[in-house]
Length: 319
Image 1 (cartoon, helix red, strand yellow):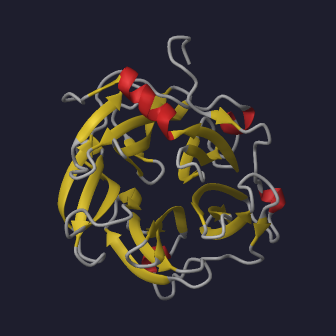
Image 2 (cartoon, helix red, strand yellow):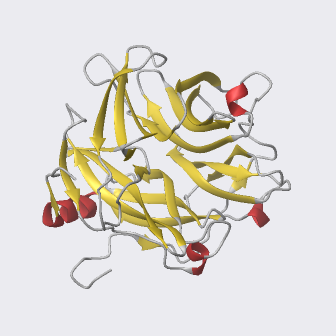
């Protein structure tokens, strides 16, 4: 980044944290983990694991400190079930985890992939051992989705990223029962023209609730002659009306720099699906996929990201 912009995220010196070599059964690669902290303080990553067919499933890795000593499930934690769920024919991908106190369960929102394209599916779990699959909640082509942890008014709220004729923008939808969704609204548009986040954006980690609003880490995709370049930006949304964007940064704040982010199955990708908040209520661990080939960690804090938005963000204008 330019010297005019502070460094907001600091890569862990032990990166990458997890690779295919760490897995207890044969896989091709591991990346894009959802993340949460369990009641006992354990960090759980629900990793996207690609097998040697090219299909993905989800597998849990647990660590007492969120950095090392990972205990990985001996078998897929949440395999695809194409026989019962044809929308999972080609696997399940990119989970995002939200603990929902009203339900006493974790909501896992993930991409189910089949002939019709990627869609958004939802499952609920208490223990990451058994899952109640709610099923498809957003039809293809849609992905990059996460549930807010509590109702907005009387309704649940889901952030997601459908693809339409005008591009790929971030939307919000509402539901009374987690199954039937409506009141669809665009909350953040991909910019047009020569921007780092032109034409295609998507939610990265689940929204982070702060006293100032819902803090969003999102990814923007830039098309270059060498391929796509995935980098991260920040935005802030109103707590009571989360479709209202308060601030959005013009510049990206984190992007591929290290070899494990630049070289892999898909080069030049930093793609987080999970973030955890420390006991202090401020420190952040952001877990991300590097080049679709490994799991890495970058740290920051809520106040650091909010301070940056106040300094460098502005209310969004029409793209």
